[in-house]
Image (tube, rainbow, N blue to C red; front, side, top):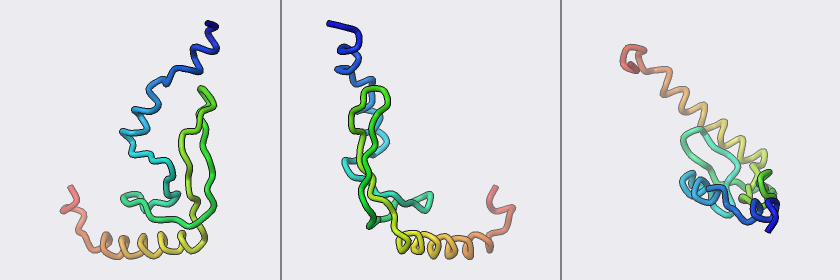
Length: 89
């Protein structure tokens, strides 16, 4: 068996890493930084450069999805700006 075919058959720990990261077959493409939000855009596929295998799919965010993120971010800022700096540390 050639080295090239052996490398293609190996997983390189990718499956375990994706599971630990919570990567699913189809993943939402927008986050507030603390929460993933449902998205409604087209689905794109991501492939591993190591072996060309499909890693997962991402449902892209639409303009409306980003508007929701902006609204949530603005609300978080309004709350955050009221916290005294000494209470953070």
